[in-house]
Image (cartoon, rainbow, N blue to C red):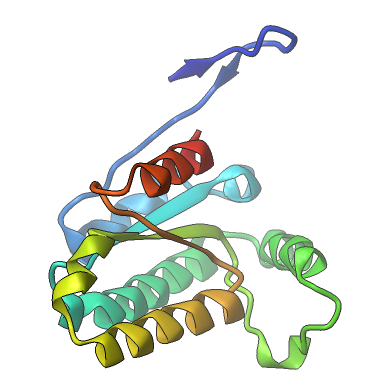
Length: 160
């Protein structure tokens, strides 16, 4: 994809989709390296149509990506990304409780409107767990619903 703002020079944006769950994550080795790490943004789409698998998918994804990154990326580059992300956190936050993830990840909670059918207590705990784990790992958390135009607009603005 090529992007050009009226006042800037052309930028090339590479977008890769690795579908099929975590089985294909080893393909990240072909697109992420020490030079591209700080400019790479991964999106993890969690499907709330299967709420019992949301946290399992989150943990499997983050564990495998972290393992891949430590295998293929220079340790100094990882430290630089982590330091940059730590500097963006609120000063009041206890940084001893945080384990910043060595890559920029946005978590998209897709089909959020499915929660209407789920017990309110389960919704509350699932949302709290995702907020907690995304915060301590320095990840963005975005809820999306195809029925809510406002959420779709926020997601579109974030991605572009």
